[in-house]
Image 1 (cartoon, rainbow, N blue to C red):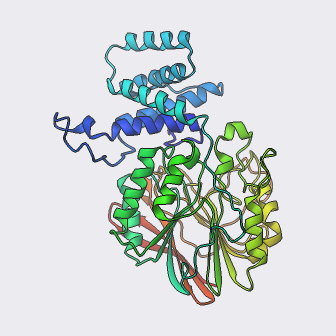
Image 2 (spheres, helix red, strand yellow):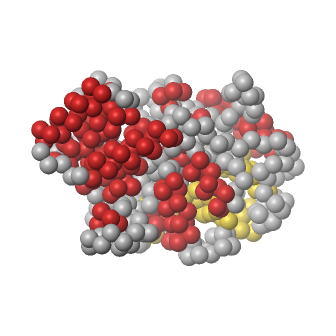
Image 3 (cartoon, rainbow, N blue to C red):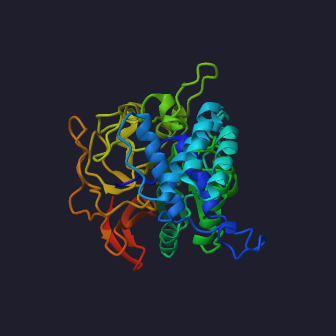
Length: 451
């Protein structure tokens, strides 16, 4: 049984955040001195028995809720985790009968790790605080808002791109260490701080970025809004933006030849079960009580490009070959319609969300679509990252000719991790895509092109 290590669910992601917080607490691992390393957090390990058991419990909860067969637990950790999650949800929902039943089940098991009680308390207190919170989304008032000052995009510069990187584990850190060695001037994370961008996870993200860049203050950092960034209500994500000097969840960089536009597609994926679909979009007069459109801001940048070429960045994908969008489509038709009038101006569109690295051939009017979402989340070597999802109806995008693919690190049976570099030099851009074997630290260039 392959158990997913993350879930597109605010509740289950908050459960995983609670467990990860307990699992990485120094008090859980220290020498008995309660003041030992109290200010430090240990790196997350996806193979930690506690963390993997929490993932099993979330997987079982999701399958059970959908009426599907739930695989039996394979050890005591998973058995206790499954009941602990049920108890946590019942407590949050004030289901007294459910609480009594879960407590009785735990009693029958005998000794469960006392840390599950800490996880339950952490989940209930945190999820209750954030579930109904309003996302502190920042709106433009003038169309000049959130366009970074002149000089923020030098005519000749190197931009590093990572996606779905905010796990806090050692493999993710190795990716940023290697990327920083390329002497980048700008770093863009295309979104997702795991599991649910709690305050502690957001703080760890920022600290790990600073560490990975070796303390360099001359590297400007940007982080797009992904769905996991919204699962704790959004406030910790916006606190990160303040620390890195990013004014909003969307932004623009311009020089005489290029503009780089980052859009927020995470806001509308705050809870996919409430939205009724999995296709996200850019905010566009969605709130009838307070009409507002981020999309108009982006349209304005294309209309006023004045000959500049455009690089567009989002967390969510415009299209995919291995994960159907809204059930059966290879294309996010809603977002395609939003950007369709200006798609010919987009020289390059980079997204994340899928934990893969794909250089696509031209498709549906987009010359260069790229997925760079494979910078951290572990993907088992037995998965086929480049297959076409059989549930896709109609044409699926093809991988561009001559492009290398992520390969498997046989020592740990996980796919290698990926990242990208963009070199701007006057009117030209060179895109380069790499994979890193985090065991051997061997870096391999998968594809490069200048346009």
